Length: 343
Image (cartoon, rainbow, N blue to C red; front, side, top):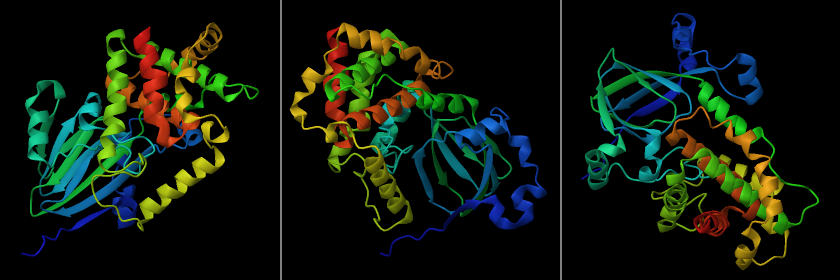
């Protein structure tokens, strides 16, 4: 038989004339006003944005999270939301930060067995809700959601509003970390590795530390190896390499590797020498400790699930700067997980 055909459209409300652009609809009622305009501009954040969604029955928006408050209004037809809290990131196998599917998940919720295993476990926090015309749903920042059109036709709109919690967490990347331009590679990796270990211990409960690093390694990286060796491109479904999204992502990665090549790529040290690089010393422990409070304070307003997601992103940023994308898993095992388990 022939394949089913779907209709799907998504675009900014401003594309649909003055009514939808907000001149006659008070979109400001959805503005949480948590982030000052000047602060948002400085950080490159958007205060408020709105989208229109049109789709036919069976159209699915895959499971992902947004970093803003999300007010979703069902205008015509019906949609079903499947929602999971940020703490479900490991179960859902969140993609790495530098992957083109970042903020999406690897786990296939279209698979009945996977869906039932999550839904039947109360600790997963999964819930479903069906919206009809006139209904409004609020989705908090970093909450995972999958959306399916269940009526013949659906028209929806949503308004995103900036979150002070997310805005604050992103400031962690603006803090300096313990690196001296005069240091050699080995001393640099030792101090940064100790810094990351101390940061993990400062942010997470003691009983969560080792399991967190293991889940970070397995869920966000090793789960991708089934589909390819490159953690920035491996994917369980076919990717159209000529799409604008993929081209822009590849251009971004090339820019990152050109402007900020990994420390490892700039040395002639063998990659097999991880163990000797990562051993902490009194000097590295003291140096790293000076910087931890400045970064940790940006995580203090987050619940644990949100903190774990952003901490994983932060670790990935520094790890990729040290050893490159292809060596992240080995680095996590040798320089983070093993030293933490030995203490």
